[in-house]
Image 1 (tube, rainbow, N blue to C red):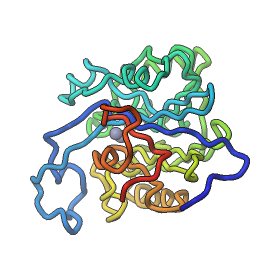
Image 2 (cartoon, rainbow, N blue to C red):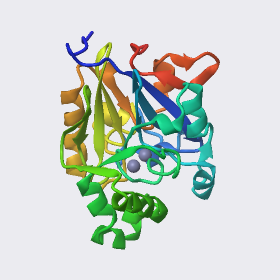
Image 3 (spheres, protein in one colour):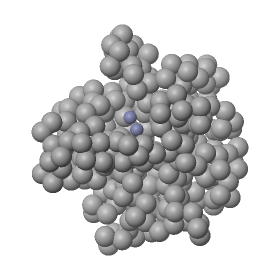
Amino acid sequence: MAAPAPGLPEWEVFAIEYGRHAGRLTFENFTAPLPEGFESHDAPMPMSFFVWVLRHGDRVIAVDTGFDRAQGAARARELVLPVEDGLRGLGIAPDRVGDVILTHLHWDHAGNHGLYDNARYHLQAREMAYCTGPCMCHTVLRRPYSVEDVATLLRRVYAGRVLFHDGTAEIAPGVHVHLVGGHSRGLQIVTVNTRRGPVVLASDAAHYYANLDREAPFPLVDSVAEMLEGFRTIRRLAPSPGHVVPGHDPGVLRRYPAALAGLEGIVRLDADPRV
Ligand SMILES: [Zn+2]
Ligand SMILES: [Zn+2]
């Protein structure tokens, strides 16, 4: 088992499952051909929607902001736990969150406007250029974005509340972002030092364990080559496969212990997974 990096804070890391797409089918999660073991195109393969929270002492960092009830209803995705309720369950008032890392600006990662009144936002410069530029003239490329999310973030740029990154950057001691691209042009992933060593929050660089394990790209993609390179980046940053947390796999909830008694939808990622 990996050890925490000496001298760095050991962060608590939580995943909050706030939404679900229960009726999702296998073919929606892979480019053809389907990987071995997933032969049936229309077998159920549900999707979970997560946000992640990092805490060390008084410092709290949110990774992605999720969607709210109205945003979920507009896209026929079920809200199972409002993000704010998940935070409060962990004893975190949203206005205590000092930094928000946006892995990318797809609608399921960048909504819930107004939740974090006191936070700075961290985004890769390439993501903002992508979702405000010529690629958005294509319906299929703009579909996973909401113009309201993009416009809200743009207003935060003008309010001096957004920090743009270009590649790897330190957000706090023991917390880094890394540009991956692939799924969206400026997708970034997060590494966080914990008591079990660095944990990689892969977000949509690996929707499911199976996308990563089988090197099977997810069909919503800007660059397949960058997505495949991203799988390698994830492996390079993680001390073991058990240190990688995919962005949408319900299996995360089975592998990690519940953070709160009686609430299975919030798990601790700084704890060792059940394999
Ligand atoms: Zn996405
Ligand atoms: Zn997503």
